[in-house]
Length: 425
Image 1 (cartoon, rainbow, N blue to C red):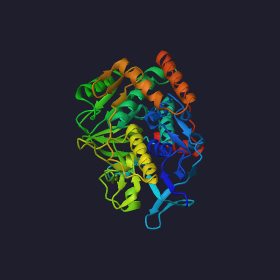
Image 2: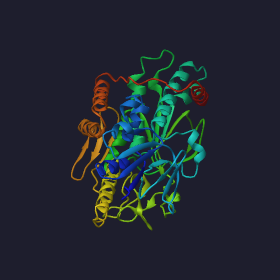
Image 3: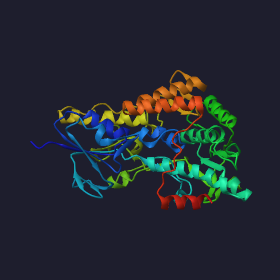
């Protein structure tokens, strides 16, 4: 008999979990991703704020799966799915499948203002992180040369839109760069005069956390010098700043962390989806009407036992991937499909600078340095590879005792650097 073919679209946490669950089976698996690496997204903000280098939080997908003989890796961009012919269309090859798993993630949502993207990059990929790092560092470099005080003030103003974990972590990190890392590096400016604003449309930052931890996060950011603006939606955004509550804020570095939208997977398979583009999946994570196609991670709209949307975080994607992998393995062995997927929430974590974090578990909340230690251990554990764990741990220890950031390198190509330099002017 012909070996069954499984195509996994996406090499993130969910896609890799499916692949690992199918290891050793007599099937042919193809994992396709537009990148050649798996990225540990929770630490992207540390690349963007020059704490660690990109290679410290990424690992080649081929290397991760090198010992799994029933899988091949294809670097290509998925363009669509022919559900009748059972083909995945990419920019370079067509892939036939018996089972298809769509784990294609999400990207930034600008709530109908897609033109804002060029002014306010989000943080989803290594490229995003290095671009934001370049914008931040070039802003200080250009401020050192500026002779006009208004222009210098705009260059030293950093706006982060969105008060979720990404926004909070990014705001705290930039504040530490300005207050602790750079003060002795410049002669004509004082980086400590930088203005960092965290802008949130809702009534508080970290809305998914308990109010007490949310309040603690806001107060800790203020102590770092961050201006926290809640109930303040952004109504305009361009290359020179943002408008909030009718007030114009001149800023040449704007970072977007206010929302996400799923990949076009719902369009590819003609499935119903929610406002964020996530496929409204069946209880077994299959696409309605297509029991051979599954959606996981940020691609899927799934609710827990209390009716709450399963969050788009790494543990959720890994749980979905493991479930789908076991489902496919069981079905190939002639077993009936298992009980519906059940999500087990393992807690929420967010760091605020180098010495503080907030942690919300089922029966435990932590904050401050104890929370940061818990956050650090948890994130190091989830990193792939002993080298990455060791390097990141050393970087954090170095940063705690010296306030140094060893990844303050601007690595953009000359043409991109010129464009960024013009933007910060």
